[in-house]
Length: 78
Image (cartoon, rainbow, N blue to C red; front, side):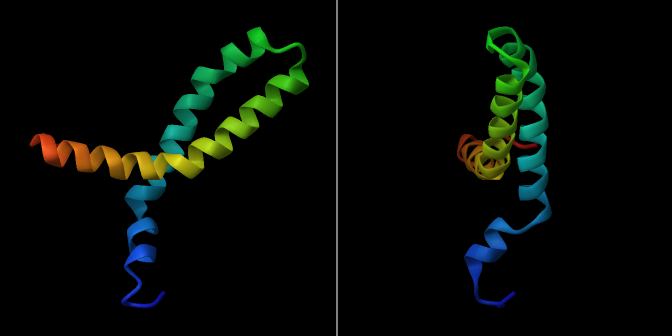
């Protein structure tokens, strides 16, 4: 990793990865009964859960960064 590539350092760190995985795990648990109840088949429910897991992993870390920024602006400490 290049030393001056701030975007890589910004998105590749442990907290970002933990935010992404934890958000995916949480929402897959929440979505499971919803998809199973509303889907016409198990296969459709699994496709929905799989796609939601991928999206949550992609956006979970970004949401974590946004949440940190909002907390900083609001003066809230962890």
